[in-house]
Image (cartoon, rainbow, N blue to C red; front, side, top):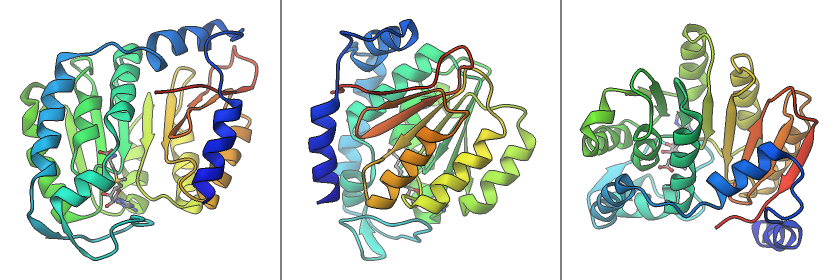
Length: 262
Ligand SMILES: C[S@@+](CC[C@H](N)C(=O)[O-])C[C@H]1O[C@@H](n2cnc3c(N)ncnc32)[C@H](O)[C@@H]1O
């Protein structure tokens, strides 16, 4: 019910490019968020999603996060994880376009699952860039490693860190000078979301971007999203309902936008 009422509120607030006074957000909206540009890689990755959607292999899932609203048993079918635990194509494609636009050198994905979204983020990466993706469950990680074979040219840029993010993320951050992009899609609870946000904040620069998935998944995720928007270092925050974008550009006045998407 929480998500339903939040969606109604979002529909009432959401605007398109008309009346956007920030040139940065205007361009971002027209070129990335509202763009219906299609890339060859989308077909390749979606064909593989179809393969996973028909995969009836049962695996033993170790859950380090808030779990799924629909799948509660520790034994899960790969097809069900694909259907209920992987981002929808329009979200993955937004991430692809953000990577293509920002040309980041260092990308972090918290929550690999079967690796579909990882492929979308890896495909447009510049050559020297690295994508670090985090997954706790060994059985899911093993399937994700096979998913990466779908794009052999991008595979060498993907580094899967298996283990609890509470330990693996601080260890990686110690080694990275800065991060350009983070997709937060692991533990959908307020405390870890805010904790990971704080940790990643220590490595941002002026053009870094954070993307939060499922910001209205529950009351506590909505509360976490509000706190993130209020953070003094977050200058531009954009609510697209399914995901929230956070920019840290010091030249921008602090402003929040609710924009139509998909
Ligand atoms: C929603 S799924 C990620 C979906 C993926 N980003 C996509 O769209 O293709 C969340 C994943 O995060 C993992 N996860 C949750 N909490 C975790 C934690 N604390 N440490 C490691 N992995 C975690 C779960 O095992 C699950 O596979």
